[in-house]
Amino acid sequence: MSAFDYDFFVIGAGSGGVRASRIAASLGARVGVAEERYFGGTCVNVGCVPKKLFSYAAHFADDFEDSRGFGWQASKPPFDWPTLIKNKDIEINRLNGIYKSLLEKAGVTIHECRARLLDAHTIDLGDQTVTADKILLAVGGWPWLPDIPGREHVLSSNEIFHLQQLPESILIQGGGYIAVEFASIFSRLGCETTLIYRGDRLLRGFDDDVRQFITVQFQHDVNLILNDDIKEINNNDKDLQVVLDSGNELEVETVMAATGRTPLTADLGLDKVSVELGSNDAIKVNEQFQTHEPSIYAVGDVIDRVALTPVALAEGEFVARSLFSKEKHRPMDYRNIATAVFCHPNIATVGLTEAEALAAGHKLDIYQATSKPLKHTLSGRDEPAFIKLVVDQDSDKVLGVHIVSQDAGELVQGFAVALNCGATKADFDRTIGIHPTLAEEVVTMRSKREVNS
Ligand code: NDP
Image 1 (tube, rainbow, N blue to C red):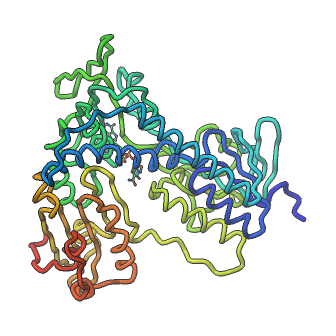
Image 2 (cartoon, helix red, strand yellow):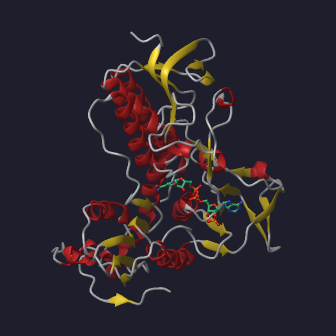
């Protein structure tokens, strides 16, 4: 019997922490978890899940409009925001309960309190102190807001999920995942939406052609302000008066910043151990997710590698299996992680962008097409789809698949499997398509375009 209270103590019951705890417990470890806020972490409570529910709500706006071309005569019904919030809260509460009971059923001891490290094996839980052989930090991240005059008037994604009323107008700052997703949501729900981004094309890090395409699309849907930023915000009782760097001014009801997230490393007792922090205060870990303090591990948004739920799940599982399973386990593989931005239309991508492939020294063939989805021949909606394949000229391997279309998030997962299997363009070509779908166009791309220099 170990001298420690627990074999494994996990701080944070979000995606990575819950997965690690359950796997470790199933492998026979005595596991404790501390969670001070909500079970399921950002994803379940103020991230992926409620955002996707909002996105579904927003889609109905398009569907009601699109239906007219198909013969439906009804006018658009009114939208009731409080109903959406109430139903969303019921679902999130249900999921909180499921996460908690999953831990309980796995035999994990739950501590609903703040946890702070006292040393490499000891954790302060407020009313008690416990010890553990191994500790996992899975505390996640938190929205980061620029420090500007009037910052106190700015909401983050945390608060936006709990607005009592739908604002009449909103200004969203940022050009990343959260900003574009919420711009799509609010604009469709009937809120006058302005998106302000300091760059010239949205979604830095995505393929340049995708960025160009979606930036043009967004110009139809929202008031898009590029190459400018918020300088200060004043509350004039009725509205918020927003002064921009350019000197222009806007009056809006609500301002939301979606300007990135920062690892939640403060007040964790890290000063008591030799855990090291890197850029953006992320916890530094090695390939085994071990920090500089050998008994302490970290996964998920707090290590700030790839801030996506499925990545945190995989990292958490990796740590639990590598610590408590005798079987050989797969190393963590960060290549070909598919991702989707749930704006309207979706952007989904797997593998390398054209710029990344060129920088890695590949000679490339690029296949690219814009097409009108069949649905929009009758709906009349001006929303083309975009597909791009990045192919290595020497090996014929498909290095990247980039799609902008309705439901692209559902489409790209299968292509991620193909890329992980090393599929070539010839493999795509010999695959018979499903007609009529957008997916078939991904396997029927014939004409190359010139490679960007
Ligand atoms: P992102 O890092 O994606 O985007 C942050 C945006 O804020 C960028 O456009 C950035 O501009 C801009 N920005 C940063 N600092 C400032 C500043 N001082 N003034 C003005 N603009 C600024 O962060 P998000 O908050 O959107 O999302 C955080 C992470 O959460 C994502 O990266 C993603 O990993 C995850 N996520 C995933 C989702 C999904 O899978 N669908 C959905 C939502 C979030 P610039 O580009 O110039 O740096």
